[in-house]
Amino acid sequence: MVLVNSIAGGATQGIKEMIMTMPKKRVKFYLIFPEQPDTNQEEWLIKNVSGYKCLKLDWWNRNLQIPIYLRIIKSTLSNLKSVFRLRSLITLNLLIRNWKINIVYTATSLNLEGALISKMTGKPHIWHLKETFGVGGRVKFFVPDRFVPLVFLSLSNKVIVMTNYIRGFFGESLNNNKVVVIHDAISPEKFGTNCKKLRKHLAIDENDLLVAMVASLSSIWKQHEIFIRAVAILKEKYPNVKFAIFGPVPKKYGNEIYNTPWYYYQSLKLKAMDLNLENSLLWGGFYDNVPELMGGIDILVHTCDSEPFGRIIIEGMAAGKAIVGPDRGGVAETILDGETGLLAKAGSAQSFASVIEILINNSNERIRLGDNAKRAVSQGDFSQEFHNQKMLEIFTSLI
Picture (cartoon, rainbow, N blue to C red):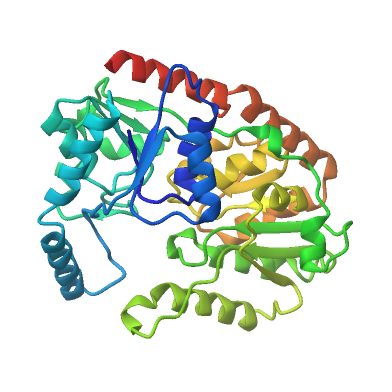
């Protein structure tokens, strides 16, 4: 039984890829998630999992985008409504019995229910951490940072982390065999190398060089401004190169408390205007076909230096694209500098501009890096076959 924080999103996509490619005779998956699936999601669920349930799962992390008084109120109301998680735990207990579950697998750090019901029922528990936490991390919890790793370890038979970068949050003192690093993987066969549809969507020539960043415009920690400033450095020297940012535009709510992502997006638009990028930077919005998106760009840039892993990176690698990332965080672990991509100094727009310029001027280097990247996700640690093998080893060891 797998508990996820959302049926959509990059972190969940890794779980879905695993479910689709695992041998059905050896592993049956039952999926638990908090929101109602849409039509496409429901079709996927019917086709790929043995059963599923939409069930409220309370977060135990702090939402730092809203004032502390509202955090307390929302947390209290949520706990009262769920009778301090008892409703969810009772339902999970019934599902474990009815579905004859062997292992409970929590695929996010944000929910406690999977770990708690495992203790209550005596079932083995796997906690798969796809977020960074603690000092310097993106996710903050209601318990002090020094106790968070102990929570994960004490409530799990195995803790899986996507990168050594996340593993570092456990500290050297907690170096034990419970924690294992397994990179997320991808099935590269659906990714081509070129696609004209994106160019038509952007109304640009199919021969124009396209440099793009793909990251949610609601996520302040993605550091889009570094990319925007790098574009400003390059635009005069390379007027024929096209630059674009792709990502869903945040909604504006009536209650100002929830508008931090919207104001962040507006600040990015203003920064681009201040730098006179109206004719240089395209805002591509949300593009739901990732293989088409990756097939239409030439250089993928990711500026976030606190990325836990960065699934968008291995998607770009699968499409054989040249990639530029920061020399810090999970992306620096995913990219082998000079072999499967290039790394720039984290936080430095000038460094990113210089590295992007190398690729703009050298088509052979773009091809070489792209070919190496494609090979890495097809045959190496990021291949679905390797990932599934490691996961099967863990599953079978706990039964």
